[in-house]
Length: 634
Image 1 (tube, rainbow, N blue to C red):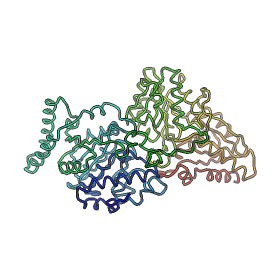
Image 2 (cartoon, helix red, strand yellow):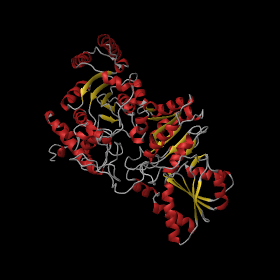
Image 3 (cartoon, helix red, strand yellow):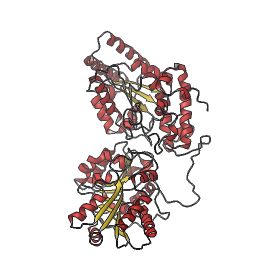
Image 4 (cartoon, one colour):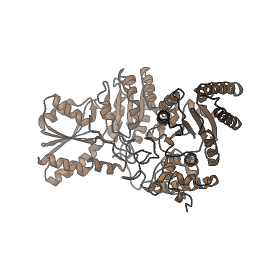
């Protein structure tokens, strides 16, 4: 396609020089550009297609980058990147050394805040708006763009609550498409479905507000009183209360989010109004590409696809492949739930991603999607456990960071039988530093009452899940990585593993290597290669720790008595992680081997493939081989 307009837009200044009537053409070209690029370089498709018109309108109306656009999550920000000087580099998006997967101030002055996790835009934008006022920058506009799915997160409500009290002129754009990754859930979805005001009312109120402000008749206290009066009158007439205006935030909408000219008109009308305001727009996730519109969940991040046919291009399936760890979780949970009526499943807005949808389909009354609310999911699970149920709460490792207090305060203190399954643990590849599951081990290791385990393969995952739901196990954490496992024959008998027991996978007499989780498979290969290259046999012993907490003390005592050199390898943060636990134990019990620890470094690992990331930080097979050979030769 010939991108007549898009090829001339190297910054929003170029966009703002175009006549208003040309903006629909810009939107068509931008949507086509995104589709063409993502067909061959996978990324987050449907979300960005859904906000093309909004993105163009925002950059057309506001003086970016002086005016601040704060995107929530960042899944929808591809059009923003393309319009802000990154069009020619967009083919490098999510690749090693290329454009970052989500907006980042470290990449562009147009990216105003980190937005890899949901629900932080309103709080961040409020801080920026208050800061602008403190600095006397009364002409600087601050806009938060948040979806209805992200609005289910508690932080968004905290920001809205504070916005009604802190003097600010922030504009919140509520992009309502009834979706997060899967369908939006909860009372807010139902509330937004019925929330509306008339266009005549909005126009009259906007013009009256501008006139009153110009005449000096509308100060802050009068504005709040008028808002409360308007809300009361509207409730009497329509029997509908507006929670936003009830909190002194002016509400406008809903507006068609795919009518770019109307969006420009509305934004121009409300942009200079004083005080916090919210514009509610309706959009369609995946807009403009029929396969994505028909199945937005699959097309949220579809991988490579054929643009013409809409067929997704999968890996070669001519030979059996191991399942994904998340699918083993979903199948095993359903299997356990069929025999244990106390089991319930919980996810914060990721039923498809974590495969809880398998149990949802068969047992909808025993599964709960609580929306983008990780903290709530943990406390909700604790409440269920307190009254005798056995919850399995599945949270992506990086997102579980937001539930840290809830895990400690609401589950661990009472040692409640909640099983926290942390999907996407370790390095995750092209989603980058906001999504790496780097900190779960070192963050949770000091917490009393927790059992923390990581399976090396699919059989171990199934057995750990079975173990976790047996009587008396208390609060149990199981972490596993994104992507495919190792075993095509993965359905093994469900047997209990004694808590706090590891495995010696290979004996040796000169060096002990200790691993935790699936990275043990890479270490197995590295040990074989190192011994082969050195021409030695039985030099390296390999221990699968299996449990970070409690540690297998008998195994570590054997290791301390037998070896003078120990190598630990983990795919979590090196500082305070599994290697630190081994080192502390050996030191505390009088053992003095030389210990070398490999793990994630004390900096945020950037995006790329997992293989590229491991190579850069020294966790790939050649690096591990080199470390083993070095220790054997010392």
